[in-house]
Length: 367
Image (cartoon, rainbow, N blue to C red):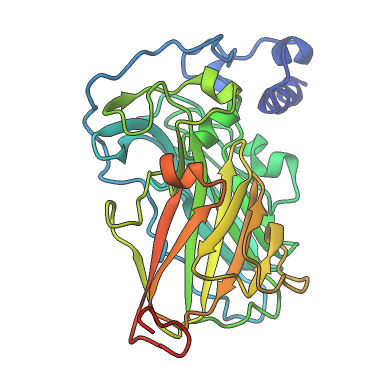
């Protein structure tokens, strides 16, 4: 009964239910994996902002948290169900949002979005999650591709220095979000704890020349965009859904000339973009400036006929879209949230640079 009450309490807390500890009828403790790192087991959301921070930037733990958009597992090339051993580590690290602006992130494997998991429908996944002993908070993982309590979250809620594991069968195809789902899950997701799991249909996906993986999330801080120094997290801004930054792969303008540079593809390549919206709150109006998605898979649905020649499409928080583009002419394709203040002022813009010889019959800048 104690174990049952503990799991129910964690479930209610994960949903943000007020008084979850009282509802469960017992008091938690840090050993049960439902504490907030201070050992009291309450996981109470702060009444308001408490940490000040600024004026100077912190030293960083990692050079970057922005995941490499080209670092994706290869397409499924097997025809029978397989067993996969997958391990992930949750980390709390300080890194730059943009030069001179630091933030305390939370991640899966030091990157945002977390590593893409790629399997086939019918495969079995044995997943081991480790919470780094250097962390200060509990973490877990909820995979939207899992049939099971909390998508695995109930059985992976662990304190720093602990590991947990579970096994699941990938029963429904699609591309789905995963995220941390401990109490204050909106804070953990905002700080970077989300990623994508791709469950390919038995017949696989249509072949393309290039695949890219991006994610959008909001950062709520006590600073303003571009204000140098260390930006503390702001619960008040998060409650108001008023982000300081809206980021691509966790950083502002990471894949532009002012960041790590554009992502390059070759003229004529067919490109598939996987786009995860971690949120936790804003719907993205995804648009590739200078192109369209000639095949677009909404909300991770890979079985229905895709939308055709989609200019701008909503990607709701907690979902992943997949869109395919042709690249007939050289030049930049700017990937933006077409709620354009987010692109112009809050960081949500990246560039896919198409390299190759001009095609004046298609686009001629000097007629």
